[in-house]
Image (cartoon, rainbow, N blue to C red):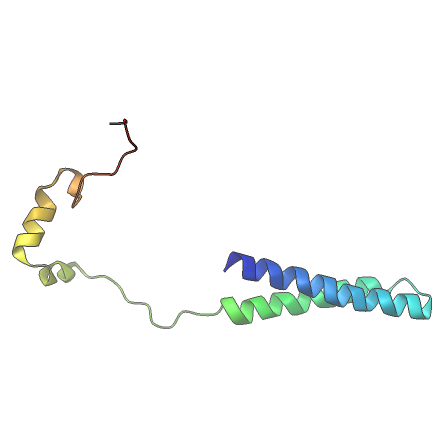
Length: 96
């Protein structure tokens, strides 16, 4: 997701800044490059928010009654292990 956002932002700046630069070269001005970069930035931010942002509609909360779905054997095994872990933590070779 991070590379998609970065790519969208950079491509908007490069494409619209390049179009503005070409218009500047054609007309002999210096203002359209800045306009193109700002338009590209605005459009790419809009696209990022549209694609990756927005409200999350189905937020589910975890209730305290979710422990009743665990069988009594697995729950007691889970609770009796040190630190509440189901298994020992993995270590690198030779390290304890």
